[in-house]
Length: 181
Image (cartoon, rainbow, N blue to C red; front, side):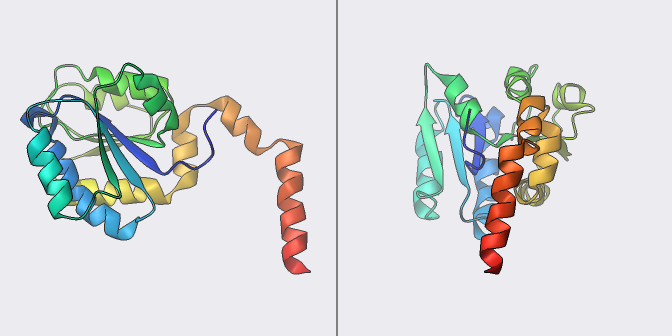
């Protein structure tokens, strides 16, 4: 089980033009100003690594963006993330979206030609007009700012049930009473 708040946005894919990580980083510049305690992890490798790394360096995003590279343990990244972002200019089928849903992650995605609209239907996740980085920015911030929305999207009934367990409620009451003293 992951800690309640990891403040991690995850993106996964080859570091290529198709995957639009350059667009995601443009958005992240603004996202980071509003949500400085959040981190972006991009898992994957590819020919755009140097360009993306330079953008991160030049815009002083090294503290908040990690280019993870390839991994043999992608599930660990899905497990620790709170939000999944798909910034692709176009997609084949969007297998990463299926993976993200399987891990109960809320998704913010560009509405590219194939995949996202159908895969995300009825999940409550957010579809953003294609290549619209300002809308991507505001949608990410909205999702980051709204714990309840993320929980309801998450489809993890076990986690939802945890919220109502007596020990959690008791500790909240104890905190409340101690604050009043």
